[in-house]
Length: 184
Image 1 (cartoon, rainbow, N blue to C red):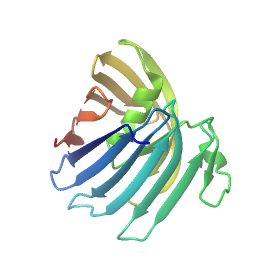
Image 2 (cartoon, rainbow, N blue to C red; image 1 turned 30 degrees about the vertical axis):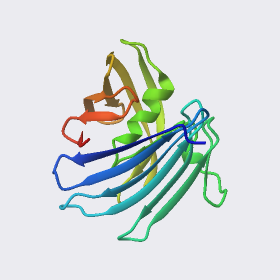
Image 3 (cartoon, one colour; image 1 turned 180 degrees about the vertical axis):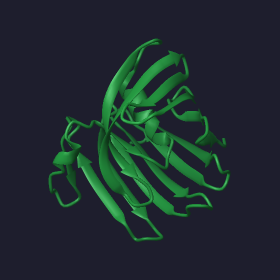
C-alpha cells in the first residue's frame, strides 16, 4: 500500500527537456515512474520505472525510448548481481547496487537515501549506468559527499565531472547545476 506519493518535475539546462515523475513511498519500498521529453538538440522520449527495496537498493529498472523503440529491463538482487528481463545474467554489472540513468536527476535520490551519510561523510559506489537515448549499459564509479544538511558533492570517479547538488528533505534533487532544475 502506498503511504505517500510525490509528483515532481525537472527541466534540463537547455530549458527544452522536461521530466515529470511520481515517486511512491511505502514502508518497505520506493518506486518511481517517469516520463522524459528530451532536449530539442537531442530529442528522445523516455518512459522509465525504478523500484527499490526498504534499504533503497535498486531491484527493478524498466526503460522504453519511444522514438527508437529501444527497451531495457533489469532485475537486481540488491547484492550486486543483475539480470536482464529474460533472466540472463549481466556479469558486466556485478557489484553495482544502484542504477544511474543519464537523463534523470531523480536517480541521485537512490544512493543519497541508501548511504544515509552524516554531514562530512563520503562514500564511493559502483552503479549500473544507462546512457540515454541508446540505453547502453556500463558500470561507473561515483562518490557522494554530504556537504551540508541538504547538499551533496557528486563526483564521477572515472571521469572529470563534479557537481554540488541540492536536495529536499526526501532526497529529491532541487538543483543540479548545469544539468537540471526542479520546476515545482
